[in-house]
Amino acid sequence: MSLPPFQWWRTVFFLIPVIATGTIVLGTLSLLAGLVDRRGNLPHRVAQLWGRFIIKASSVRLERTGRPLPSEHESAVFVANHGSFFDIPIIFTALPRQLRIMAKASLLYVPFIGWHLYRSGHVLVDRTKPGASIFKRMRRMARSGASLIVFPEGGRNDGTVQKFKAGIFLLAIEHHLPIVPITIVGNRDVMPKGRLRVEPARVRVVIHDAIPTSALTRDDARPLAARVAAVVQSAMDPVAP
Image (cartoon, rainbow, N blue to C red; front, side):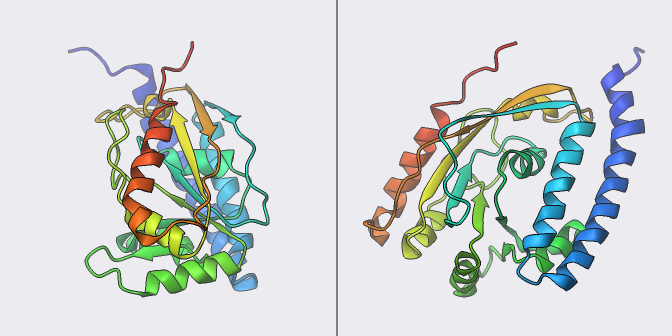
């Protein structure tokens, strides 16, 4: 019987304990920051530190390319493909903006991460009964100047962008928020699906042109979702060695 590869040993005996410890320490710091800043801005700064810590510890080389980001004073909806557990640290590191996540409400039960999401103004959705409260949370987020980051595929993909769910695009149209498509390339190489090991990898975050929604109607939500999915897919090329 052959022994597991080096990266398995590194993941199990180094990365998992280091990342768990860092998450506990920075998660506690985030909770304390939330007592001072209830808008969530300071806790998100801590979350960005957490993202950079994970990226650095995992030997991920991160590069941002493409179009300039919207103004930091302009709320937007960033829409990205989802192919790895590392996508949130990648996005938090690559986008120096006040970001809020739209995520499933069950994450509230994850220690430290769930507590941070609850205290920092993230948009947590019960998918069985989303209700009108999402619209209220979106308005509150936009008024605070923060932006939303969404993975509208509904789960991790297999390397090809899957159909985008139209709900978030309807919300963006209702609140006149621009959509900024983002392609994350190489994220699946960091932690190959079905394997307990983290690989050093190069990841590229491609920013596409923002798409305004102020002139769109509710009927445009599905066509907009398909358009954005095509834009994201257009940059899903192999990472050069």
